[in-house]
Image (cartoon, rainbow, N blue to C red; front, side):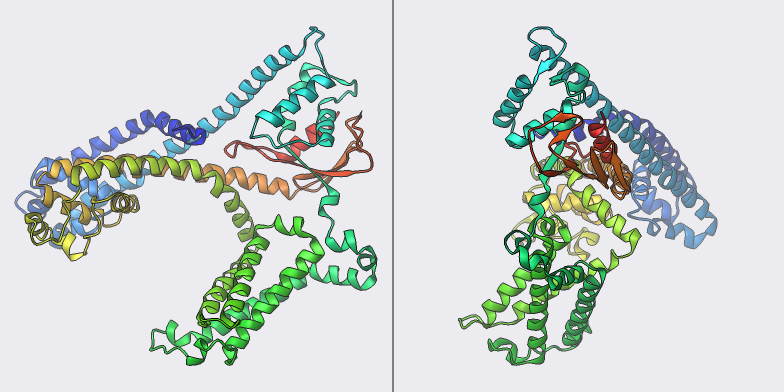
Length: 568
């Protein structure tokens, strides 16, 4: 309850409910009408006896249809007898499933877009209000400006008391002040102070921080022709292509080695794999590939420097798997009591996951991959909302149905459960509410939708209270599947297009701003000695500046934000 992002997404969902109720009311009328119609037209037929014995049962049958869990099975008794009955079923599915369900999604998406826009405006209003109040408090003499000393004290307090703001160095404080003082007067007016929130989003780093070990400590080697040639080779596309080719060969060799296992045939492990020696051709290959990957990572770190290398998620994944493979190799082949080289093969198999990067060499896939990496962290709050409702319903399920699903022959309930043929035939014994984990699993199965009725019927038999059981499952489907799942879908659609625009902006051209900075993509390079006409006292140092939004749900044009900060 103390997670602000969780509270925000929960409140967004609650605000959607009135609009969703309107659409679901239309759906309810349609279901009741078709159930009534079904009871009449299927009276005294196998379809009527099985699916429409009464209005209530007909409504339940058609609700299951809306979830697609029993379609087309439910229509087959009547359809096998008379093909004209397809009109009844198809028209119902078109109206209820294809129209109403997508109408719910449309309402959800529209309300979510409105919520995002309102959040952005609300933050802007709140930021302006609070910064204006702060300016008034800092303007002790009512001079309509605040001094450098006052701003420096504010930054000192922020460093000490606000954990969300990283510790600012002496130089960074003066650089940030220069961003505020656009007229170079040495004092900050209200209009300039209103940018205070923006400058706190800046991440500053010295260009010298990206210097490599060789460049810093071995300058003569760094400047040599041979080393420069090596740098060009390692940083070239051909180097990555060569590593990708080796990865493909690695995958092919592992596939050949495991062919019998992959083909479903009898597989017998070579006894030499467990002797702790590199004495088979496969072990030679695996060790060689590990050595190549170690050399690759070492060369990239040496040429690009650790800071630049570590900024790439792909590089860090490669390095992690390389280190695991190297440790596994030493552990297996260094004399000790453990000598199962299958461990190396498992690690190497994980290494082959790098083949996924071949897919992302295609521009469209590369863009989708980059967007996904930005969306996943931002999606955590909305999944917490889903987890919250799952936990609440799982707790209620344990209170209502805990201990009822059992195979204990000493318990009479176990014989009642045997009558639920769909439940028993699917061996759904572990789908119960006997503990929290099992209950959460049952509810997750409901979110996936498929076969949820086979699970639900078991609880009807063991409780003897089918309407209680149906109401429980119906309520969760209404909240979890129709409600929260549509919010999740709305979030992903919204975030996808938002991040797609951001990624496109990061690919932008090189742009020079009034001689102050050069913006390339989402990063600016500038001389820190003088910023927007204000002397900082920082001599002979170039800095990188990037914008780091604090709110992943708010669209931010990073290039435009940087341009605004560097424009006088």
